Length: 196
Image 1 (cartoon, rainbow, N blue to C red):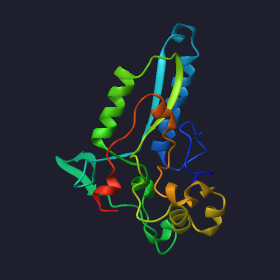
Image 2: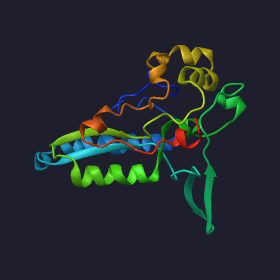
Image 3: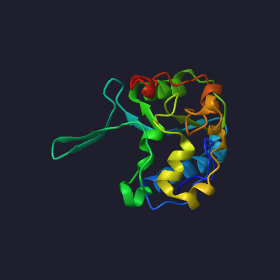
Image 4: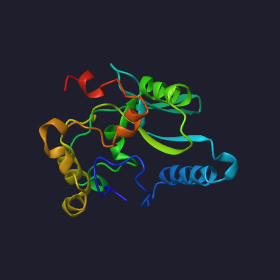
């Protein structure tokens, strides 16, 4: 459900329902990995679950590429998140309005996967990390975005107090501490590339 109860979200935030099948499929894979990790034959296996944001091209052109249909590339530019004049379902119906908030550059995504597969210390069990840009890709403040996108009542149910302090205004919507504990940090500041 949207918005989440709290931002930034922990990397192991539970699935709380969604009408979007993609979100359900991600949850199901995480449940499968948790089940596999409990099997005796996997007691020494290190499972790192990476919650990847909306992957975009590295600046200067920030574009989401979604594959090919009939031999033609499906892609669109991704601008920094901004407030809407009315809640999203009325102002700008879109399947995943939060894409800019969790954007990550291709180069950071690849570096994250390589780091997890090759450089991260092996620790048996299941770990969760997020792979998003180092700074929030948003022109407006998170509390304002949540209120604008979901309406006043929904915004009251989402704790965005972390973003009230000026030094946290552009912190990512996912907690990057677990990724940093593995030794990985994103490098591409998408927002800075827009001069913001």
